Image (cartoon, rainbow, N blue to C red; front, side):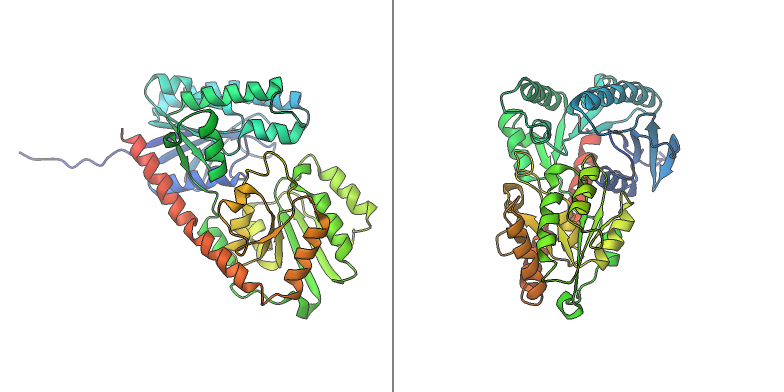
Length: 401
């Protein structure tokens, strides 16, 4: 009797993200990791005016919906979330009828976007909810809501039911896992997939032996990310202003967009920092990587808030993997991974503390190499090669059930 060896059909994964693709790096990393292992991956996302509605990007089928993100009031967020939810619900349903995904993965925010996968779930698809951030804490930080306000109680209610609807929860760090487990589900349902940089993109630009800025009389600092008030760019500008008499060639390069850009540029003018600060706007990931390679020190000048205390900024690993010092606030989300002697800490919101740390790195470059080496050893435990394997194995197991 002849037996025919049939190849297993690839696992089909549908994704939904209220963001731009491939600009949003966490969905991009995950989509490409699955595609590289032979899975069929579709991504439903937002659309910029100059982007095609349908496109194939590095093996991922991208379907863009006619919704743009415009930062503003809470009402504006609610409108955008609701419109995208409705459009993605119908788009995902139609794609599911054609492609029969075994897995649907939803990226928050918002949490309730997971219910766009209602039809696939009813017909047996497994649902992954990737909780990039805890929505209640983000809104408390952004809108100064109290823990007991109606809005925050509603967001916690939505979080709980969104998690219950899902089969598996992903989140990027220990503090986030603990807070979700404390109020919405058991810890065994939650898996940590950290936001580690893709080695094939980052490490080809890595400079293992950075030059000494003091010998050049210059210091190039860099920030990249969302330009919002909680990220403390005003604190960074105050610190840099104080350092100008001590570091004549200081320079600050800022990349990103957000609702704080206008105020940020006003502070630059008010402090007369136009010859020191370069604002580059939003650029692609590859351009960020190239700029990390030519800057000396990364800054993560976050203010302290309910959210930033729990958050682990992706940018930490992005600088460290390229052997660049990075200055970070002393917060729980970061201390979960790094000891005091393996990273360059400052007191969140304190311009004097930040200026002191910048000056110490500038003045004692070789001495601080030991701190950087210890930090790299921490990063090495969580590099994307390890994180992606864990993630792909998890999806494969779920897809074969």
